[in-house]
Length: 348
DNA sequence: ACTCGGCACCTGACCGCTTC
DNA sequence: GAAGCGGTCAGGTGCCGAGT
Image (cartoon, rainbow, N blue to C red):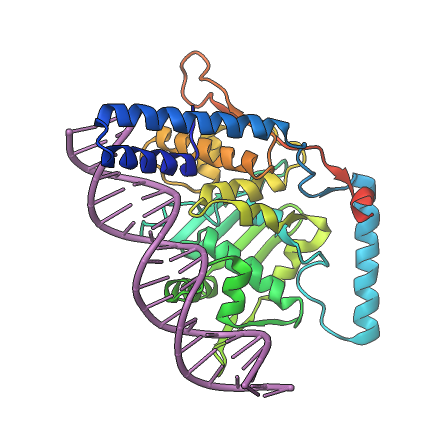
C-alpha cells in the first residue's frame, strides 16, 4: 500500500504515542502501519467515488485554430494601426491560466535538478525540443530550473497590465507565485530575476526559423519602493505566434506539493499534448534535464510525480511498461489525460 | 521496512509605514 | 484612526538520506 506523506506522518505520530504509553516498539510499529493502511484504503475508496476530472484546458480543432489565428492577426494589425499603442507580449488569456509557449516546456531548458544541488554555469548546451518537427534550443548562462520558469511566466503576466515592461513588488510576486513571503523567498526571487537576465538562448525550430533571445530579461530596475521593473526582448513575442502555446489552469500547479519540480515539468510538458504518446523512459530523462545518479532513482521520482498529477486530476492515469527482453531503454512511459473540451464549448 | 535527525520551507502573528 | 501593504521572525511541518 503506497501511503501519502500525510498518512506517513500520521503513522509516525501514532507510533510515538504508542511508545509513550509503554507499548513495545514492534507492536507500536505494527498497529501504526495497520492504522495508516486503513486510512489510505478509505481515502482511495473515497477517491473512486469522486466525479470524473474536469478537462484541464481548452482544445480546438485545426480548423478552429486557423480561424482564430487569422482573427488574432487581423486584431493585432487593426489595434496597432488604430492606436499605435504597444500590445502585451502574451496573447489574451484568463487570469486563472498561464500561457505556455510549447518550445520552452518541451525540453530541458528549465530543468528539474535536486534543489539542494548548486547551480552550474552552462557555457553551451543544446536542448532537443520534443515534437513532430523537432528543433533545438541552444543555451548559454546560469542553470535554469522550475523556479526560474515560474518567475519568468509570472513576469510576463505582470507585463500584460503595462505592455513593454513588467512592474511588481516582491510581495506581489511572492503572493502570485504562491511562495512564502519570508526573506529566503525574497532572496530566491531576486536570484531568479538575476539568472533570467543572464540567460541567452537561440531557438531553432521550423515555425520560427532561427530566433535569438540575447537575454530573457533585457533590463531590470529596482525602484525606490523596492518594486522590480523588468523589460523583455521583443523576440519573446514571437514564441506565442502561430497559436503554439497552451493556456494551462494555474490551479494544477498550485495544488502540487512543494519541491515537486519533476511534477511541475511533467505538468507543463504534457499540457502541450492533447493525446500524449508513450515516451521511452530514457528520452524523458534527457528531455527534463535531470541528472540522476541512478536510473531507478529517477524512476522513483517519476512514479511520485505522476501520482501527484493524478491526485490533482491533471492525469487520469499512467503506466511505465516493463523492459522488453531485459533490454535497457525499452521501458515506455504512458499517460492518459482527461477528455478535452472543444474551444467553442469552453467559451460558454 | 522502519526510525531518526537535519534541513529547507511554510504559516501565521506581529510590527512599521503609507494612504485615505 | 482604520485599512492595506510590505517586511521580519519563531515555530511548525514535511522531505530525504543515513542508520538499523
